[in-house]
Length: 274
Image (cartoon, rainbow, N blue to C red; front, top):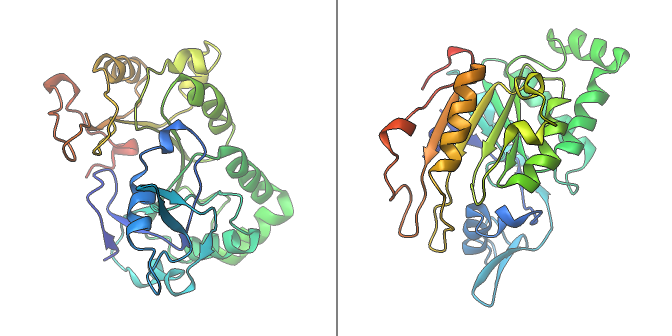
């Protein structure tokens, strides 16, 4: 089995990369940054990657390949949905191209799993997917691993938190060649109009295969208006996009605000339920 997680939309996490940096307002209360700072002492897993400044957790900006965990999925025989880099961002600019190639190689060698790759930097993700789609490169990948590029069990997604991030990131995701494109609207700190973000083109919105919604959940959580996920749920219903309501969020602990009955929906793409 992979590394167990409480994240409901996945089965396990795999973290061959450690370290990150903030890129938008949604990063302000990042759970990964807080965890990393707590384990950043001398000899600890995140030494040099995070720290506490004035009582607040902060990434240092350094990113590191963790070679001892690089081949973890090869040892997990039971098929699982694997969230790749729950504690980092696979497409962070500090991730070297050779690291990315090594990680993709492991994923290709363990095709029994479904890999869920979530980023706040889809421009680099698009570059990587396009590079792999070059005919000679794609042919070499198919000859080596017996899979077309990109493999259907690799899901690619972006994380947005408000209209500004949606406007910037969703059009890039829509251009990514992938069997499954998904959106994590979490932490929802402002409303998102997916239709507006995609230049009022419903066909473009329909390019998304899954939308996850969730409020912020931490001691300093910013509130989420239930109207925000309801509008997304309605859009998903109209377009036949699977909708997954993760949490309402709250300030006292994870999931301390109950999910309203009409939002208690946990769907997966392609009929892959929990």
